Length: 73
Image (cartoon, rainbow, N blue to C red):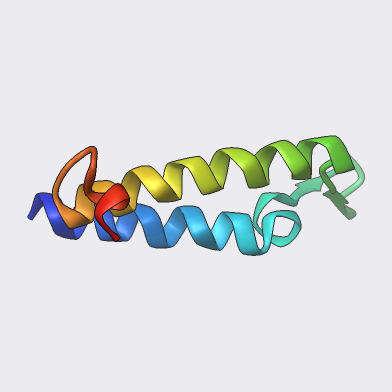
């Protein structure tokens, strides 16, 4: 079960690294009822990609069975 969670964690993290702008954009409704989209800045997208790759590697390590599992690949 723990390895399955690690694999799911890695898949979601790598999806965030692959399409960070699409997955972090938010839609809001203004007081007059119109919809607007809030887009992240370029700095936020870059930081999100870096953090997502790190979390993806942690998830792969969890799925493969240990903190040093990625060094054995």
